[in-house]
Length: 155
Image (tube, rainbow, N blue to C red; front, side, top):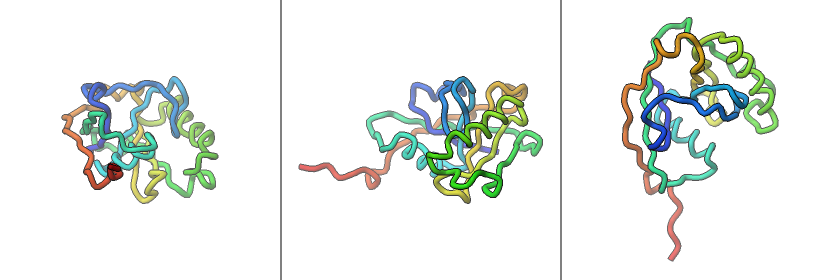
């Protein structure tokens, strides 16, 4: 399967994780966030950064993961806490993701997007024993912001 990740140009050459905390992981848990499409990756980036920053050069990282159901654990919306996509549920979501990460339940955690719940994000555990063998950066693509997404410049 192909997954997509948007990264600043300087971090787009290899698949590495910072260990920074986010919705589905705690500090020190090395995961890669990716999405099922370039467009969902774009929305996730805008929400995560709280703005469009056209001055930062971005790349789309195209990631290949083996199509093996045993490598993916899926969490369905119905199995998540109430209002899981709200900031108030961050700690609960981190617990779910941390449990998955620590137990190495699977290489990938498939979760609904907090932005578009009918679409999915994929969290990849870079410390899982299958990471090196099953996950590859296939290529990077140039990324640009469509000017229609940017606020007009005032004179």
